[in-house]
Image (cartoon, rainbow, N blue to C red; front, top):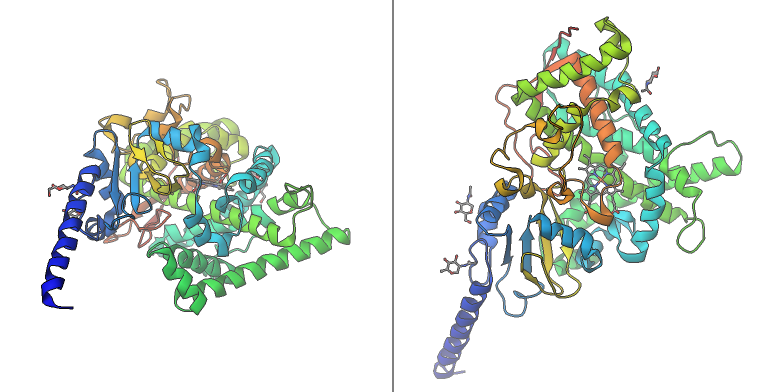
Length: 518
Ligand code: HEM
Ligand SMILES: *[C@@H]1O[C@H](CO)[C@@H](O)[C@H](O)[C@H]1NC(C)=O
Ligand SMILES: *[C@@H]1O[C@H](CO)[C@@H](O)[C@H](O)[C@H]1NC(C)=O
Ligand SMILES: *[C@@H]1O[C@H](CO)[C@@H](O)[C@H](O)[C@H]1NC(C)=O
């Protein structure tokens, strides 16, 4: 073509793109959008502090919601490319509860996790999800499951965590507390899910094949979200990059679970099955949605989904809890005081008796201040800092934001706890008292449950919430009764940008003894 036609044509294209972009800019709110790359530059510049950046953007808006697009390209930007970000409790109630059916996890999410999670409870919508949810919900309300959790926790504290801390105290060497906690909760959830404690928490901190394959698989599945969907699908069909890691790791994870399930089936068939009180055996006795027993492959995915749901969340929450406690001696003192009062009552005045055994079920139940401190931790550092929903049909959120079908809504759980208008002027302070009745005797969650969504809300609320509190309270009490922690000199705690709010470099602490008094 000649210059004579190319130049005018380019000018027409450029100026119509420019006009289109100006009108796009008017409909969007939130961080600055740029031609073509949308709001990506701001995100990239703030990549190491994404959750705080989102909270800052939300604070600048009038109703804690903004809309932006990752790529400012015609046709995409107003539908699939459009991202609505919110932390407004009214919107959260609408999305998670009132119009639940309109906001599924959606196809992007499901296909990215399908290789690892199959159609397990965590990764399904509609009928597939509902059937599993009903079955699981029945199990999670039983007292026997709570007792099973208490037993697994008790065992790992007594036989392993206490020993490791004791030796760290003697050698005066720093330990990565987050690593210890991740190992402990991984052991617990494996025990609870399929009756087998892999003992990844032990003094020499062993590598566990199943555990590291699980880590690699999760990490590789997450990588799929970094670029548009077709990229990972292409990589998968070519068998390159992280897709290879994913495939290999999933294979290791699945074969480990297949062995466990096969062994269990054999034990049942030959009648040598001892009393197993884990989730696996509970599901083996159930029927699926069509009245058939669950297949081995379905059982595998069920177990896997529970392990994923229950492993990192509580250890990450505990890591932030200890971080906050170390920086708030007043709260630490009150927690120890509360445990001491309960133990003086149940075990007498001899403090040596207090640290002989981990706390019992009933002792743990009486720790309200500790529960408040854990909720307060999860308000400021929710283990799942943000979550995503797909918009099925065009809708309008309670604050007036229009969300088109096919777009996605991100809800920032991290930001909900950090808005002055939701939690008051002192929202950034660690103050467990806000969770207690004025006399401090009763635990009182906020009247509007959508002001605290760290365990999600509505029909898909976390099933393990009570188990998690039980586990976290037991571990927190067991540590604080025996030890004082302090941050290792020079150690900097920073957030890792992932689906779970890990500490990027762990939590390195020094362990000292605690003197108890009556
Ligand atoms: C502090 C600890 C925990 C936190 C903060 C937490 C948080 C959450 C959140 C935010 C969700 C919603 C995820 C989503 O739909 O995208 C969820 C779902 C779930 N959680 Fe937890 N969780 C914790 C511990 C546990 C434990 C210990 C278990 C199991 C023993 C568990 C089992 C589940 C299950 C099964 C679901 C899926 C529910 C469904 O989709 O219907 N969680 N949890
Ligand atoms: C729209 O353009 C104006 C002027 O360039 C800018 O200040 C504003 O931040 C833009 N809006 C968005 C959402 O980027
Ligand atoms: C975060 O992004 C904003 C633009 O939205 C930029 O002005 C700011 O410097 C960034 N902050 C950091 C720490 O990179
Ligand atoms: C913890 O285990 C010990 C035995 O190791 C047992 O005596 C104690 O009753 C258990 N406590 C709980 C709460 O299960």
